[in-house]
Structures are given as structure tokens and as C-alpha cells.
Length: 356
Image (cartoon, rainbow, N blue to C red; front, side, top):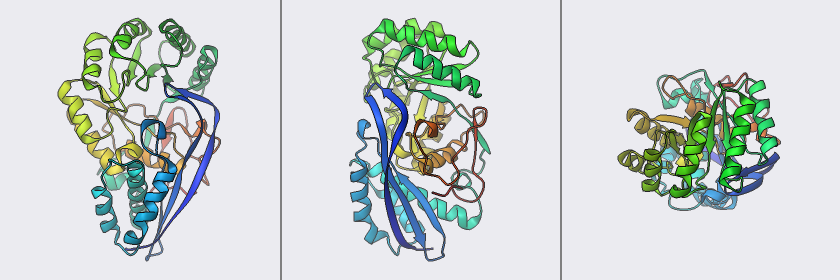
């Protein structure tokens, strides 16, 4: 099959409520929906949604790059398009998201044509559903506790709380304590600091927070500080995960060499597509680390792609950060992705199994 047309549609989706991280308060998510048409009459979908606050560029960067690539890719075979994606360097803003969109759309076409889910194109064995965590990003103590309790009542068995936003170490402890009290002792509680602390700040704080039986703490120090991450891991009795420090295969290898983490968080949108995400997963799991797949709070196409990648994780699959559609006012899908008792099933049908 050959590419006959590439079309992009920009979107801007407001958050349904306040969503705060250590990088600030977000009000909307922006990106592009890519539609790839072929001479066989089969079309595929992709999504490019760069994370601007993490240095991933903007939707405008992604749009300009896709426009520049379109003439060369029109008429190309899907195999040639995939080869071109793999050759794109990730050293420019927007490239990772564009790679992800193009690769997703091509694999969506192949999956639809063959009548198999996209996950089957990535790994010989895949799960039919994936456990997922709830993400709590509301900043207030009482609001965070209420949101966490609501998530548990909806069937979630893992809650991820955004931290690094409370203003002081004591306020951080109080907020985590309130959320632990709200969810009870049997629900897994993760913290995501988005690189908010220095090692000297993280170590005493995490020693205090260890009393709340944490499943893991994600990215306690800024990305790039591998030595600092390793230092924190050695000093605290809490599992440490890397997210912003685990964006490429080389970065993960550096983390492994430094023995800096117990888990890696893999975002296909940031890694440069599903195949690069799979390479990171294999490297991490072969070394005995947990791999957790998350969306980047994308629209439904990007989230569906992350769900397919998560379905290829080895058993037992940990709770993944895919239940993010409710954080936005829409996921843009004809049939929204659903969460049932803390689990998400792969959509029926070939490829991604979704329509915009």
C-alpha cells in the first residue's frame, strides 16, 4: 500500500477541571489529528501532541514538520514511511510527536487491513485489557482527597497524585496524608513530582512520605540528573521511577548503568512512537525493572495508541496511566474510551479500533 494523502486537523481541548503539576497549572491540551489515506482505500489515524512544558515543542512545530514531510511521503509505501520515521532525529522540537503520529497512522492502516489490533503488530502476545491508575492533579488538599476517594469508589485500585505543588515540605506531607486517608490502606498510591525537587530536598521529604506506603515516586528530581536520581534511590525506602529522564533508549540505558531507578514510565508520544516505546520497554523489563505506559493526556487517538502499547507489557501488567480522557472535556472519539472498574479494554476491530 502507498500513501495517497496526509491530512492534519488541529485541536485545542480544555481541561475539565484544574490540573496542576510542578510545571504549573494547565488549562487546555493542544495537538493535531493526522489522517493517512492509502491507494487501497484504507485510512489510518495518528496524533501529534507535543508536551511543550517538557521541551517537546508545540502543536505549531508539529504542524510545520508534517507539512514539510508530506510531499516526500505522499506516494511512498507504508514500509518506506516507517523507515523514514525511524530515521527522524529527535533533537528538534515536535519531532517525537510527529514520528508518533505518522507511525501510529501507518500501523493503524496495517492493522485495519489485516483485521488485527495494533498491539498484535508490536508484540506476538498481548493482553485484551490493561489495569489503569487514576491521576489526581487538583492542587488543594481537600479537593485532592475528594478526587482520590471518588476514583476508588469508581473501582480504581491505584491512584497517582501530582506532588511538588503544595508550597512547603509540611504541606506536601499533609496533602499526601489526606489522600492516603481518603483511599484507605489497600489502594496503591503513587506520587509524581515532575522533577520538582533537588536531591537534598527529595531525600528528607521522601523519608517522611514513606510512612504512607507508597507504591513508587515518579521523577523526584529534574530530568538529566541521573546521579541525583541514583542518590535519592539509595537514600530512601521508596521505589523510584523515571519519567522525563526515560525518554529514549540511550537515556534508559544510562539509568540502568547508574542503578538509578526501580521503574520507568514510557510515553509513546515522547519516545517517538510505539516501536521506540517497545524498545524502551524491552530494555527495562529485561533488566528487571517495572515498565509503566502512560499517555501524555492526549486526545483519544493518542490514548488508544498508548493503550495498545501497554497491552504488550509482560504479565503482570502494572497499572498504567491511561485513564486520562476524563481530565479533558472531550477525547474527540466517536465512541469514547471507557474505564471499567479500573481497567481499560482494547477497542474492538483492527488497528487502533477508534474513529474520530
